[in-house]
Image 1 (cartoon, rainbow over the protein chains, first blue to last red):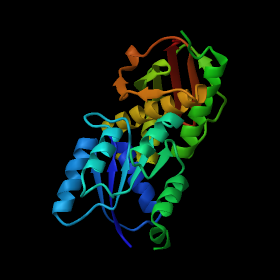
Image 2 (cartoon, one colour):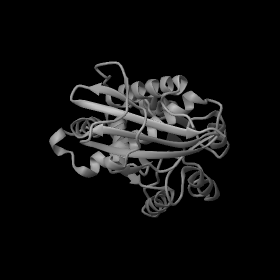
Image 3 (cartoon, each protein chain N blue to C red):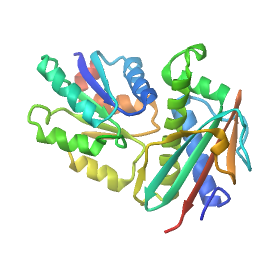
Image 4 (cartoon, each protein chain N blue to C red):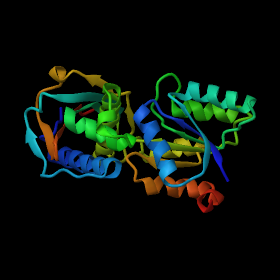
Length: 134
Length: 149
């Protein structure tokens, strides 16, 4: 089953790295959108929804300008049209306190940077078992 | 004020560099790390400030040839396809990851916020104790300094 994915990171190389990791893992993606911060991400998500192409998964960094990952999670949970989209946080900030706070805000899982490609694949396969079998 | 002359911080930084290079770039330094007072002048450099339980900054400098190769590895491109923006983005992301990986080892229970890393001219890089790792075509050097609360 193919998915629409949104990668949110202010680092263009990290967006490319995550995108390539998903491709190399063989996960079937129909559209891979990108955003440089949380505000851009919300715009992409709402545009996609209006176009009838609901995003199935968000992979987001935490420390970003304009609207950070925590802010993005809060805004997502307030929007009934976007609240159910799984969000995987991919960040260098991996203190227990921070991870707990993100999970309370509704993050589905957390991947600490740096990470081996298998780690991201493991997390995504856990969220979408049918994806790993495709 | 602590810097890389502090053994625990130096060990944390060394482990962080090895982890980032191996996991994100599939390579390891060709020699053990050395503490020096300078880095290669022909380098791309970036600095990441952090605050929380600890406050300070980490600076990374990487020789241009190595930066091009690491950027190519990260992006899945050929080295001759890498431009200045790719190098800038790679070195700032390196600063971000090294900062998180070092501080989380040095103070695992602490709070940490990393500000957006900024590229800096090599001539503005700080002087002091740098930890340098030789790569196959250059080197990567890290400087970190923080104030104790």
